[in-house]
Image 1 (tube, rainbow, N blue to C red):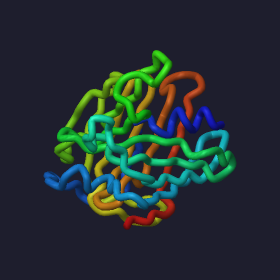
Image 2 (cartoon, rainbow, N blue to C red; image 1 turned 30 degrees about the vertical axis):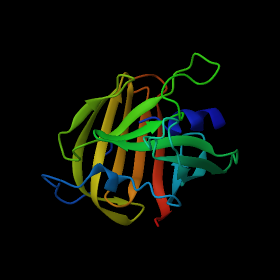
Image 3 (spheres, rainbow, N blue to C red; image 1 turned 60 degrees about the vertical axis):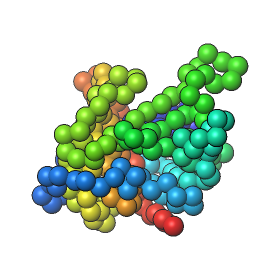
Image 4 (tube, rainbow, N blue to C red; image 1 turned 90 degrees about the horizontal axis):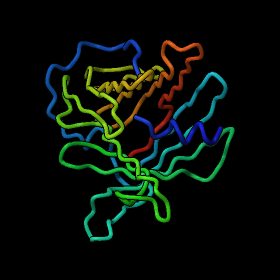
Length: 209
C-alpha cells in the first residue's frame, strides 16, 4: 500500500466534466493555481479498487538552494492518515518562468550516493489557458484541455483548469482551481489491458493562509 501511494501521489486522466461554459482566455499567473504559502493544507479522499484513505498535503517550509537562490519554493509533506499512517512523504514544489514544477528531491542531479536521478515534473505550464501543451522529462504529453467551473463532492470551484497527461497506457487528469489548488485527480493505468486500474483523489477540505 505504501509503495503504491508513493508511486502515484506525485505522478502527473480523463473524466467528463460537470461544468459551465469554458473560459476562452485566461491570463491569471500560474502561481494562483497552486498557492504555496507555508501552512496551506489540503485534505483528499483517496480511492483505488483495493483501498480507501485520507491524504493530507501541507506546505511545510521554504527550501533555499545551496547557491543561495530560492528556486525550490516549498516542501510539501504528504501524509496518509488512514489506513497507512507512515511518516510524511516529502516533495518539493517551485514556480519557474515556464510553470509549476514538482521535484522528488532538493537536488537537481543525483540522489546522494546513488545513480538515481531526481524526478522533475512540469505540472502546470504557463500560460494557463486552453491549448497550452508540453512534454514532460519522462515523455508524457500534457495539455490544458479546459478551463471552467467544476464541481467536486458537491462544491463548485471557479475557473478550474483541466490538465490531461497521456503516456503509454496511462491517462492522468488533474483539475486545478484558481486560488485553491488541486481539487481533483484521476489516474487511469493500463488502458486497454486486461487489468486496468483507476486511482482517484477528490478534495474534501482545505485551509489557505
